[in-house]
Image 1 (cartoon, helix red, strand yellow):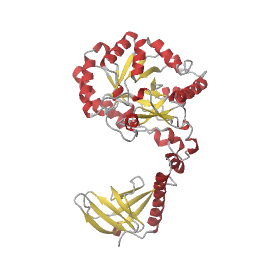
Image 2 (tube, rainbow, N blue to C red):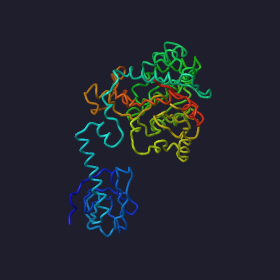
Image 3 (cartoon, rainbow, N blue to C red):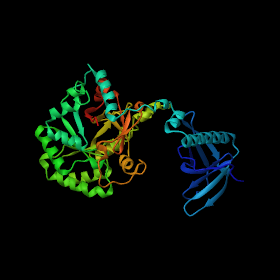
Image 4 (cartoon, helix red, strand yellow):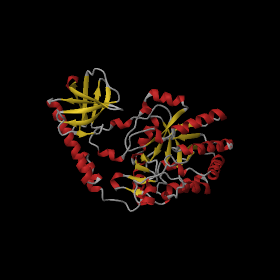
Length: 446
């Protein structure tokens, strides 16, 4: 007896199987049975559980299939497949509903725009997708003018350090030209935020380097000049290292040697966004006996964050925490000399882990591509044709990806960013964050 109208390789997120406590891959699904695959041949199988995703409820429905329904087994060199036949009415109902939802999704993906697909499953307002700003500057002016107006008269608590993030060659050059007080005044004034409560605080620290793109880290001569300037002006420094490729390990080692030769200008902290980099720095610290502190970078904190999540119909409270809220993981980080975490104001509430941490605002990273999407679009005409770039032409100095206004997001270099308006409009949000353990605000107006 064959499986009727079998569909192969249903995505694991829609259908999963558990055989005697072990997860298995369902390779075929039909109304009268299914096929599952195991790496090794099992002995006597006692129970088989299937978990069907229900689109209507946004949850999984579990169904127990008696093991005696298993009819045949086929072995191959790399795995063993088992066929299970059943006439169970609940099974048939769940299969019909799952396949109907699955075909509906595929049909929408093939015939509709992304917004239409989103509207079919969420409260996404597809009718707003045609409303774009003319430029990122226009979009940011709208955001910041509204923030300046709403924050007028509000107060930010005193016991929090203010840092500015300098992460592009334009910002490196601008800061080197003038004192921090003058630079900060122009920085806020450019976007009409000079009277904002955050702008009234003195800048005590700078972050140097780009979290998301290794090509935007300053050259050695620029870095030396910035570290020297920071020391002269009495400004603390956090150096930000991006993710790295295998071929860049030697360049990190050379950079650490460069810093060791300039001990008088050594940064206070290094924020790492790559576990390999963290290992290299710990080893370097041990060898040189320096006191530089390690921070957990944004790319390693793994919060789920996307302005489009506001349109989800399901509960999103689970987005508020990550493994950073687990004591065993905090202990692991502490054992690896990491105690400060670089967090983001990210469009929804987060549960701030125990300790003293930094909050980046008002923009947050949604996703980052190892191979630059902007380069792919400019050089190849298609953002999907990404490839490794050794000599970057710097398209991001003047080009960005724009998105519909209502999404409050944009793409810059290899990263997609969202705007968190609450962090600029409501000082009580920041004050509450400070009470929960944030002792540093890091501003980057991008």
